[in-house]
Length: 461
Ligand code: GLN
Image 1 (cartoon, rainbow, N blue to C red):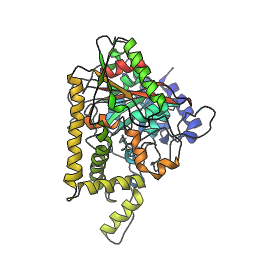
Image 2 (image 1 turned 180 degrees about the vertical axis):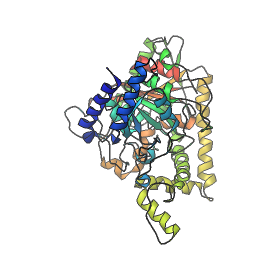
Image 3 (image 1 turned 120 degrees about the vertical axis):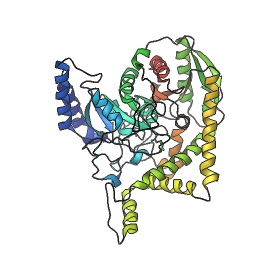
Image 4 (image 1 turned 135 degrees about the vertical axis):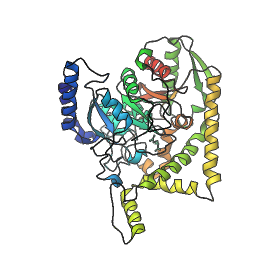
């Protein structure tokens, strides 16, 4: 098959299914055809890159030259970057083909893809015997749904508190959030800069390994990117787990978690044991503070990052009597409800009177969470196994969740700790629940040890 044939095949699937799933907010068939043609020429010349001719979907958070980049927010209407994000540039340099921009929660704030200005993404999965539409998770819901329904071969995604891993778990796909610093953040619209990381969502562990190798790089334009060699992750697959220690944190047995998640977790433990790993109980005592601390740190950073959307530099402008009135009107019209909520929380916790009580305290908690993991790894644990999410995919426009944003935030209970500590985490499909919906397990690793996660996840998938 040629790159152009492969690309045409994906374009036809997108044409047939995207109206129903709303996974892409913009399809770029003309650009894809040009890129695929170039791929075929490079293949013919014997100069194929690692991803030559592979059609990918790009989360709308990544800046793409000349192609609308809006973070699925009204406030970035009409914004066409003149620069390319480092992560997507790395993919194109390896020969990948861009199919278009994928739907997401507005500015990556959400767990259901329902905060997008472009409306919700529909999960391609249905519960057995039911026609109810389900969410794909968020914020990388478009990426996960597109991969699950073959609307691309793989997708870029980002994860600030779980946005790669939770949607992967909800759609039966594989998603890895690498160690903070593994991928450059340059050209990726910022949500919470100390937590944001890019990573792939893919159909299996091997594809995720190949994609991450291409996406990762040190980059002079992001000083938090790390100058370490990027290993050949694919080579780790199939290696034995003999001599490995897998930690099981007691604190992840949360109240109200369905029995079948607990059963799945036990099943995962059994598989890893069979593959030669030793299983040890560990304690991560500050886990229960991770979610509240995250919902201080992330909005604080967001309120500062989003200050730049002022109607002057990018996207939408609503005229006003004077400049302040213009700012206010633009931001009132341009941001959605969840984004405004985060800006208000963030501004509050950073304000002079509350800074010490909230922000500084949350940063201290963050250090304790990080230390919990360090102690476990120092004691010889190689990776930690937990459920990826406390439930399977839920319904679109769930009334309970709409009425109470904190309930929505609880989706991140198993994933935010990993971002707070800057560690790598992978979600891998591990089975189906009683409704026939996918469930995922999560593996958490040592800093820059994504190889161990790939090798261990490969045993589970
Ligand atoms: N659901 C979390 C939030 O809304 C995480 C989002 C993300 O990882 N981008 O903040």
